[in-house]
Image (cartoon, rainbow, N blue to C red):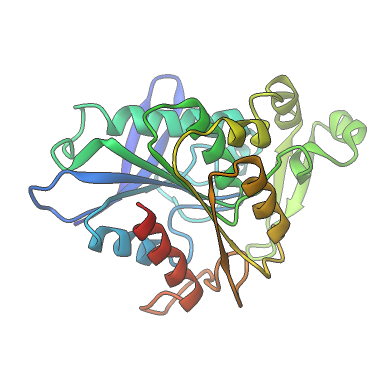
Length: 278
């Protein structure tokens, strides 16, 4: 079963658009919640094929758009709402994961007989990996954690560095999206939120707190988030498992749009290792 573009409405917060992939049978399945990365969205590239692979393994796979990722209910692909994108920050993304978990572990949805709420894996790609590490360190409902090409620090990223005085003066700074050619805005609130929550948003501290199985998957040749960030994560949590993917890039040789019916070999390795870990 594939149920796409479902909407989770929330009081006084932007709604979340999400997809469920699962086998409609009598089994209660482990829940897998997937978090996309920076300038990402749930329908990017081959994420549907990834979701189908997890579903075929009799897992209940959910992917969603962060509420301020720039998509909308009517247009969940790409970035029609740059005003929302400008108001995104790390704590909003943590709230979004919490909202999804609260919903999926409740009795307020039609899938309650399909999900084993005692078996929840969080998967995060890139920036979503960092967010997932923090959330997993805080939330006892999460029983396994997997990161794909994850960052190891938010403090050295574009959104918390650069010419801070100019950013404060202008109130906004921009990054060019090479694919869509949009100038994507980051309001200064992003930096203020990060500084106000700096200890909570310390990925190293969060990784050290983890007591659950933790799989780190990263491409050796990743040009976007270098492999040494995966080594950092493994050093922060020495009980974790570090898996190297060779001859691959930050998105494991996928692309957007992705027209092939089969996953790239590198991404298939990532999926196979992740399913085996779960």
